[in-house]
Length: 278
Image (cartoon, rainbow, N blue to C red; front, side, top):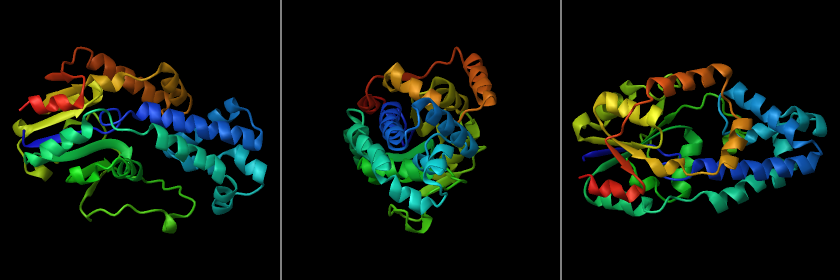
């Protein structure tokens, strides 16, 4: 192995659990703060998420009709200040629940010491993915982060948004149309990293999106089976606020049918098992 391309969410950490619990803490705090029932707020979040094409935008709170109506203002800086305890509920729960899976840090360190080039590939937006790598103390394990370009920055005060210092070429932004399971983007990554596909390994938690495209390209595919071990209740919350449209759901169902019989080259139950692949 000369190049490891790794997915992030539910491969290096349990995104479903941390994000659903953090979001739940925030929306419960918001409901109490402005006296609006949860079902109404969740429906509004879903609408805003669909507008921006992404479910991971905590500042969507400042766009909710119920919030605008309660405070009689659409001034985002003012709303951020008024809802500071609500947004802090998200951050506090995230601090408790955003954790690396067992073996991840030690494995990345070991591969680095052996001269393996490691890059991250994710469909999470740029700021969110970079924030998590930095927060979890593993950003220095990667030579590049391939991530989706955020075309809808809704931070209330963009010039003063906290920046995470990385080298200028660390982030490689991908257009939204280069989404999984597009095998061409893996060929693109290998070309960028100057590594032949036969010397690359791709690890991810999705058979339909990760393993299928790795197999098609001829990259050694590793299925992180442990990434599916999350509570159904956590998943239920995400479904209620998903940015997916009916068309997205239909596309996902088609992918499941198309790749129903997909098989990974390897299946792992702990990230450290990558070390035995050679």
